[in-house]
Length: 423
Ligand code: NAP
Image (cartoon, rainbow, N blue to C red; front, side, top):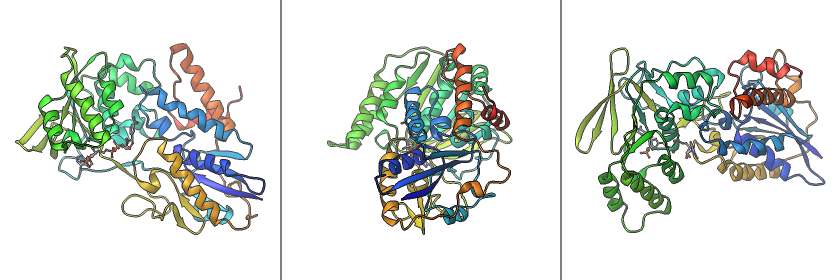
């Protein structure tokens, strides 16, 4: 018997859900999978989230393309669910619907000055430098001397590193052309990354900390005293990850001092209190154990976590889809960040999706025979798998003479044109 499954969202969680279903096929049970994506391009955060100077992380895209090569897999990109086509309509046509739409909105600090020009979320800044078509026109004021990044997770680390590295290091990457130009014109030379708690609570991971020592044109400053205090607070038997992080930070603190003109500074126990400025960001005030501290800056980027954008009213107030172990209601399921919130690395989605697909299979009844998404499409210019492959090849070909993995097409209509272009 063949069952039809629609997966909404072509990021890592969506692909790993498809892969789990493919792996769970047997002589009696196969799956016809339709992967639906709002953008004309798939791969989700692997395309628009992962930092461009981390190309190794993006090699997981090869796994996605292998999943997509299955004859029972179809891609419907450039199709938005929730506007013209609803989740309920899909649930009626398919044996199961899997929501894999992630968490795309940045959490807010809720402090004065957060809406000033020059204050923005990593949820906007990261897709801007990664050529996401919705963020190409974002105005990022890089004409100041100092930028501040709030948060002590890997997203904050990516953002701070992108601001603090020498932009020539991005020439061989797939950073959006508009962002490379802007970084080359940038006058930012000091980047502060601030954590509201001590180093022992930082959510960075140690490989990301260790690689900072390899930045060729950037000083990295961590106060030795902050790390020593954290080591003593963490006690005799800190968790493995905490120890590994503290070791990595101690190495950075001990690093021989360099005198590049770009510097990344770590601040701990700095809780943001207010962003200063009348029209533009002019500074930020922190509460610290030693009293208030003000840093003059022209750009503040918050990287304090994400919540999900609502689709068809299925999200709860915490920015996740209401679910019990991935079951939403009827034949609707959820995987990835939309299910569990914005945590874990790309690979975390593999086991997470596999567990939910097991549940989905245990709920299956007799296969439905009342059509699929093609009955619901009207004016959408669908980018299918071969259309996406044309975009992919065009981008790779454009990058080749420049020594880049690809030059991303940024504009919606240019993406759709590239998808339709026969070579
Ligand atoms: P995260 O790891 O949850 O870090 C969020 C940070 O924001 C925490 O340090 C948190 O501090 C801080 N924060 C939250 N609310 C705050 C507030 N009101 N004021 C000040 N600070 C606040 O989230 P993320 O950095 O967005 O990353 C999401 C996931 O993607 C993580 O699992 C991450 O590891 C993963 N990721 C991995 C990579 C990689 O592998 N290279 C790259 C990017 C992202 P508290 O702890 O004090 O709440």
